[in-house]
Image 1 (cartoon, helix red, strand yellow):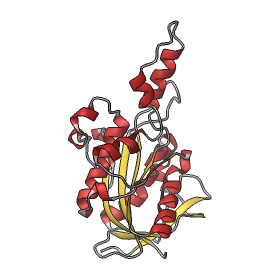
Image 2 (cartoon, one colour):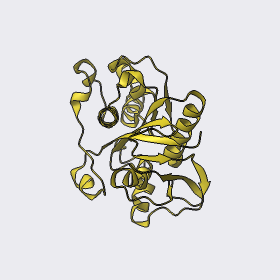
Image 3 (cartoon, rainbow, N blue to C red):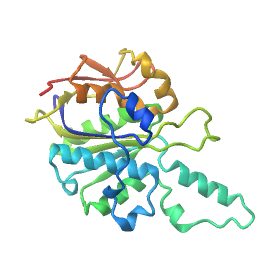
Image 4 (cartoon, rainbow, N blue to C red):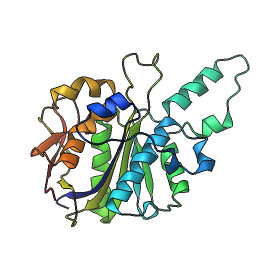
Length: 249
């Protein structure tokens, strides 16, 4: 496989001031993307992931139920996990079964499969500051082996402030609908992630060091504005991961 085609993009950023600072369109959480029976159990992470995913599917005019999915998050359901840990240190140590059920890394992926009645494979992963790069590499591997299309969703909610002071903010999510090879109507081509020396934009480095999921900002800017360098950095550290992009239509 020579490249992936990007067919649809969705970006969710709940903080209005942060949304306004982005060089491309982003939207607030749309709670209507989650069925009512699941909505009351949903975290900020899940709400953002669903909002971005639905937007990408709608832009590409694809049915969510037909797509394999990759859900990637640095910290996952960090607030639910923090809640559980706080309960466990109390005298009675009573844990909510619902909270425990919703604390795992694949919570969003599982609920997405339920909500969309999707029986396609779903993958959940985390890789610290390399989460975006590893998610794109996973997408490349799956499309190389299976061809077709898939949905990639990256997201992170605001982390509890005392766990990592100065980190884990702002909340952000984005979804990329990807296809193997060259597909008509693509937004752009994305190459295989590889290690390189491309420098991450200095204007966003501090933000990414605070919230690693923001590492997609240069890639999203290229996709949504058409201003494409030959290669885009996927990590704020150098040497780091990068992809070649092009073929805007």
